[in-house]
Length: 365
Ligand code: DGT
Ligand code: CA
Ligand code: CA
Image (cartoon, rainbow, N blue to C red; front, side):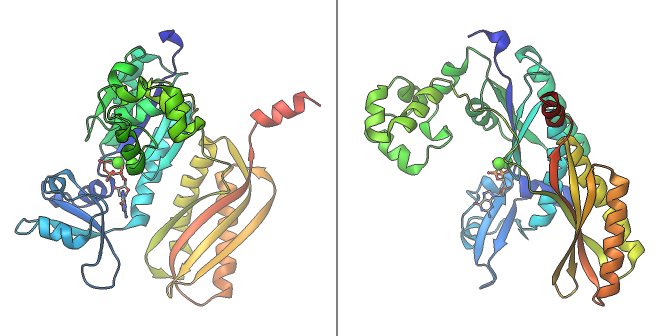
């Protein structure tokens, strides 16, 4: 392969995400096993573990196990159990994603704590380490979180590489090293190989990705069908073409936050919405979009949800205009309702892609 033309793809994945965010919020947790729980509310301890920090993982506590089992495994240990606070993690995630998107030519978020970055236009493999370290430093400085990064010539390699040296890891698989890197790894490391597929592969004598890479493709197709067999064959040989691209057309971009106290004071609410508008607008601008609708979401003290939207006369990405419209909508809402506001959100929608597509279009006219 022509190394100078290989794509440089990264997968960045935050370490023990929910638990790390809790540690950052309350540094006295650092060093102790921390277990973030999804309490179902039925009985005191019913529910599952969302994630645990590495101190807790040493005792076999991990995502998906019952809270009761986690408590058993941590019996007699000074561990901390915390209820999951999804909105809070989402806010942190949104800010980290802005940092990651800033460092990519093409960007694709694939979960609350991970994203693919195609950085081929800004670096080749000789500069990949420097760029990855810069991204890790940015996230550390701005959000005080560690993130693990994997780099390879495609998504499959980047994803597997990101998992090699967690936490705070960086693994770079250079062009030409892909097959060698993959060969000894168990097949379940491959994207899309779950428990059932592992069993079927084992019955064919395939245990490692190397076994899969050299397995007869026709025989694979008999078991898995042609499409899947082709994917297995290519991916295990270090070949995977899927591009990094922003997922789908977005319907809206929004941010929501809880007010310091329930209130009907316009000034207090505007302090919050102004900040939210700036965050939303930053996201809009980074995506190269303009919007034609601006709206607010109000969660009342009694947890009712009210929405108000206004259509604009033309597309914009002007934050002052967004703030003005949000203010109008809020004033109107407060006139119409007498209930105190608990949470407030802003959103924009009805997007058009700025410049690029428009100029392409006009060039045909
Ligand atoms: P890592 O990446 O191995 O250091 O650890 P995490 O915790 O970041 O794991 P990851 O990346 O698979 O998942 C990101 C977050 O998603 C995690 O912090 C909590 C949530 N999560 C993962 N698995 C589960 C699950 O089975 N149930 C629930 N409720 N949440 C989960
Ligand atoms: Ca993670
Ligand atoms: Ca993840």
